[in-house]
Length: 138
Image (tube, rainbow, N blue to C red; front, side):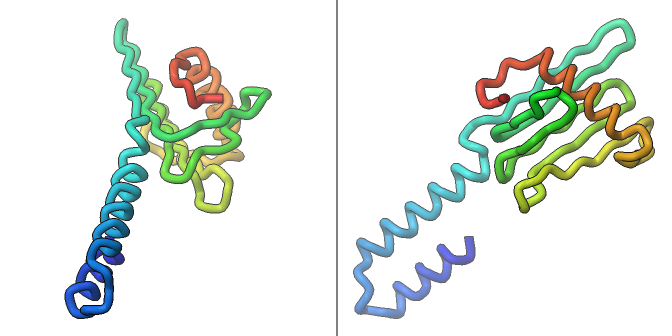
């Protein structure tokens, strides 16, 4: 966003810059930022409640699951999944290096991957795949 302001300020002080080109570049940058910020409209939430049970799945971006259903193989840049099944929560997002970063909670306490986290991720993925209605889930 700062680049847009900088380009605009430079264009005001430099008479040699073609204002039409600056406006086109600025507009293109703004549209690109808006498109990436809203995940191109790909944001969904699933909520199920009843009989003392609560399930919420919120996600954005393109999500790829492992073939064996044991986890998430990738999430597009800026994408994420937030999963809650009663008091158990999973949050996953792109780690910026091509991998997936997880945060896992059981009754408000953070749990590690080695101490029950691996099984919880597999359980959550199984539920998410059962509820799948998103065309970018693979």
